[in-house]
Each structure stands twice: as C-alpha cells, then as structure tokens.
Amino acid sequence: MSLAVTLAWRSGPLRLLSYLLATLCSAAVPLSVAWLTKLTLDKVAAGTTWQELAPLAVGLALVGVISSLMPGVLKYVRSALERATGLLAQERLFGAVNGFTGLARFEDPAFLDRLQLARQSGGMTPGQVVDTGLQLVHGVVVVGGFLAGLFVMNPLMAGIVVVSAVPVLVSEIWLSRWRAEMMWQIAPMQRWEIFYGMLMSDVSAAKEIRLFGLGDWLRHRMLRERRMVNRAQQRMDRRELAMEATLSPLSAVVAGAGLLWAIAAAGSGRLTIGDVSMFVAAVAGVQTGLAQMAGNVAAAHQQLLLFAHFQAVLTAEQDLPVPKRPTRLQPLRHRIELKDVWFRYSPDHPWVLKGVDLTIRYGTTVALVGRNGAGKSTLIKLLGRFYDPTRGVILWDGVDLRDLDPAELRRRLGVLFQDFMQYDLTARENIGLGDLELMDDRSRVEQAAREAGVHDTLAGLPRGYDTSLTRILLPEDQGTGVTLSGGQWQRVALSRALLRGDRDLLILDEPSSGLDAESEHAIHSRLRTLRRGRTSVLISHRLSAVRDADHLVVLEAGKVVEQGTHEELMSAGGRYAELFTLQASGYREPVG
View 1: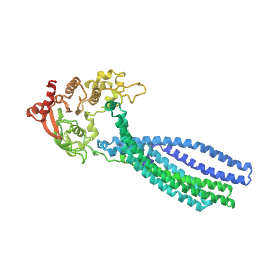
View 2: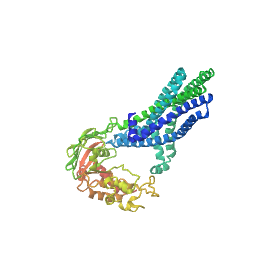
View 3: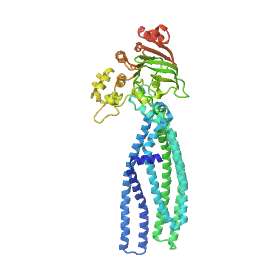
View 4: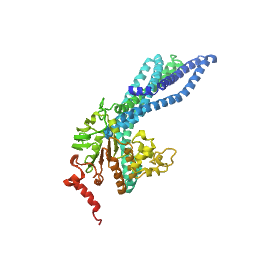
C-alpha cells in the first residue's frame, strides 16, 4: 500500500491534499444535515418563532448547496488524481520492463500473465487505493459522528449496530480475496481469447483463414475461452449473492428494532421529535457507512492483491546479471571466441547448443549453415547477450561478454533478425529506428535504403519516406497508408540494420529469405561489398549465398560438425558438400 500512496503523492501533492479536503467536506454534509434537522424539528415542536428558525433554515440551505456541489468537485479531483497516478505508474512499470536485459522474461507465460495484470492494476490501482483510503476517512468521519449521537441516546443500540457490521466486513474481505484469485486464474484464458480475436482481425492472417476455412474453428476456440472466463465470473457472482442474501436481513432487523424503540421512547417522552429524526438518521448513517467502509476495505484489499503483480514486476530480479562496474568495451580488433558453449532455455528444455567452439576473426565473414533447429539463431542471441551461455564463455578480444555493459555491447552490433519487425510507422521511422540519433538525418536514412535496394520503392510512395507503412495506425493528415510486400519489408529491415553504419559486428540472419532470385542476387552482391573488411556473421539456407564467406561453420543438432572454407568443405565431402550438392542439383535437374 505504501507504494501506491507514494505514487499518488509524487504524482501531485496538491491534488492529493485537495482530494483529502474535499472528502472531509463531503463527510461533514450528512452530519450537518442530521443535526440541523433535529434542532429545527425540536424548535418547531416547541413553538419557536420564525426569527429563531431563520439561522437553522439558512444553515440547511447552505449545506444543501454544498451537498449539490461536492459530487462534481470530488469527481473532478478524483479523476485528475487517477490520471496522474496512472501515468506515473505506467512510466514506472515500463521503465522496469525496459530494464530487463535479456529475453527470458518475455518468453515466460507466467510472467506475461503477471505483466498483463500489472498493466491493468498499475494504471488504476494507485489512484483507486488512495480513493478507497479517503473513502474510508469519509466513512470514519460520518460513522464516528453518527455513533456519537447514537451512543448518547442508546449505548446498547450503538453497540448492536457496530457488531452487526462485523460479518459484512469479514465477508467482503473473503470475497475480495476470491476475486483476486479468480482474476489470476482467468488471466491465461483472457490472453488466449485476445489472441484468437486479434488473429481473426489481422490482415496478414486473413488470407489463410479464408483459404483454409479457419474462421469458425478460431471463433469456437475464442468463445470456448470466453465461456470459461464467464463461468469463473458467474461462480464469483453466486458467492457474492449468497453473502448478500445472508447478511442483508440482519441490517434490516437491527434498523427495524431500533425504529420501534425510538417510537416507543418518543411516546413515553424520553425522546423528542428531533431526537427520533436524529436516531433514524444515525442508524441509517451508521449502517450505510459501516457497509460502505467494509466494501472499501474489501476493495482496497482486492486492489492491493492485484497491485502485488505490479510490485512484483517492479522488483523482479534482472534476468541477466549486469556488472556494477562493467569492463570498458573496446572496439573489436582481434576476435570473438566461443569456448565450449552449451545452452538451453531452461532446465526443462533440451540442449540447443552443445559444446560449441568457434572463432570469429576481426575483418572476416563467418557463415553459419545447417538445418532448422540446428542452433544458428540461438547463437546469434548469445552474441547479442540476450541470454548467457548455460556453460562456457563468449569472449570479445579476450573479455567475457558477462563483464561488459549489455547496452554498450549492442551499440556495437548491426543486426538483421530473421523474424524482423514491421512497425506501423512511416518508412523513414522504420529505418531510423536502427539508430535514433540518425532518424531525422534524411541523407543517412536514404543511403541505408539504397544499400538495401529499397530506396526507389520508398521514394515512389505517395508521401515518399513520410508515408505510413500501415493501414491501421495512421496520422490524421494521412488518408491511407501503404502496405509493402514481404520482400520489400525485408529490405526495409535490412536498411535498419545498415543504418548503424560501420559497427564492430554485422549479423545478418537470412537477409534474403523473402526475396525473388533476381533481388536475392542483387542483395548478396551488395552485401559482399558491404561486408568486405568488416567482421560479420551471415546465416542463410541458400548455400550459394554464403560460399564466398571467409569461414563456414556447419551446425547440426547444436554441435559444430564441420568448419572451413567452401573449397575445404567441398573437398572433405562431408555434410556441407552433401547439402551444397543437393541444392545445386535442384537447379540443374530437368523438369518432367
């Protein structure tokens, strides 16, 4: 709770203090009305003149004006506080998310569920916890004031009213715990429901969904998850209904008994007419106030249970250790070495890399070849230190990558991933994301696009490089966006990697997988020029595209089974020669 209150305070002390003052004023209204009404009725019953009643009438009128203004004031201040705290909470949350060095957190379903709940609760809970806390203050003031009057009239009745609220408080706390547990249980179901819904409305999936007739199958899957969520929520609703049906009559019995006593006491002269009105208002005010306080306590309890997910994300341990005093990263001048590198994603997963020994010498191109699942892309993730080896070390000119600042290491890399991103931004922004400092340098952006062979395509768009490459998220001044082909997107992603310029290590993972034969040849011809004299790692299933690499490494089942030049490996007649000959024969075999 302290974190939620701290966020609210830091989002704006004046807002919080204003809300507290408005809450206290709001709490004073029902008490003032009850006491002024009692005094007025007593004076009327005693035959008091109009002049003596006038101040009470004016007081009631002023309280009425204040009562009519307070809901709007409270709503305004509460909304302002919730927006400010929500903004600060989201800033903290995604600051923590961006602080995760590696990828392990984003591949953990349990963490993704926690993150989803953290996003929901973090944006609302701090403001709601403060709101609930101030509502408790409101309730304490109202209930305390009415209890004082009720105690003066009948101490026993005051005690009975308080005791009758205890079961309500306990039941509300239990219900809040059950609600929080239910939300945790249904989080995976809601995630699947969202997934199926997004899939059915995704333009890139629309073709296959219609071609293979998948619409109804996906819809049934989505509705199955929704039905499970509905059943869980309905069970929760039944529990709430059972609690209310059991406890509500208790409040009615207490109120009815109190009213009978007050009427009897007024008939015997022990209470005045004003006392009776005050007693009725006090019983109703105390019961309503205690019920609201019980609900507020339960709501705060539930919110804090959910807010625990927000706190868990903020306080989660780093997925990769970052040295407090990292070794200063020097420009690569000799080699990158992998020594007996073993890796698996968790103790429950199989080994992806098994004792890999590999040297990437400065100024040379190393090509990784092998079947899907051989470990090529995983090796790339280790070079970028998105994961650490389970065993073994990776050295940068003799320095263990674990002793370096990961952010500084990544600034030395230019990378095109096989599963590259397609951002719903403009063409210039899509390329500029490769180096934010150069995003507004149009000449550098266009140079990178030329090197990737996509400049003419982007320059020919309706707004040139300022054309949005999306039909979903569009600026107001653009009536429509443009969607690119897969090969064109691949060239844009390559431009993003090339924008980083002469980095220490260029990594290209399947840079031509989405291109036609002519474009593939043009890209690899251009890349040969760009790689010349640069340290680079190239992955491609097209062995003809990597045959000119300085060093070829064949991976199979996570192990290095062969390495050498193209000529050396062809002479050896091993796995590489077999794969190369197989691919080459596919182009020479006659059709039919």
